[in-house]
Length: 161
Image (tube, rainbow, N blue to C red; front, side):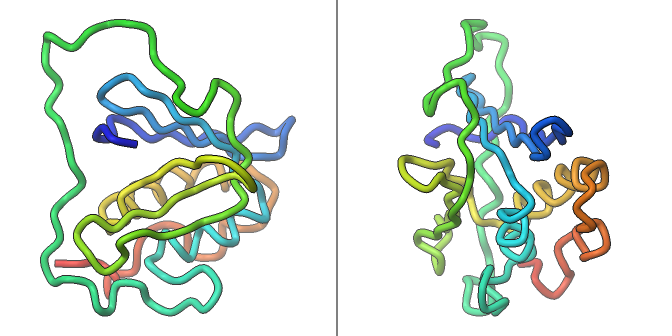
């Protein structure tokens, strides 16, 4: 994903028993992915700044100052063309989380299917907290019993200054 994120939205689909994650960029690129009950057990620790398996904090050795996520101001000259779907119009079925440049200001995490390209997102406390807030309602609507596992915000000791 090369353009700044414009909007992140998550919605529960009871027929599929999955959460649909939609990420839209300022360049009108839309990325879609399914979050399953199994995958959310990997995703929630990550959104809390922890390694999904070991639960170790991933921000311990991070730089003290990190750039906020790249935000581009909307301009009236923005084209109103049809949105693009770089990874296809069908949602990906997320099964893996990987990380890149973790100890730098350009840290990212990648939500990807079993094979093929995934969605690359900035690994910053601001974005992690935003994703947690977006997942709150869909996870409450699901019958997964996850709403009691502390999904409502990044713990203060994991927020970077």
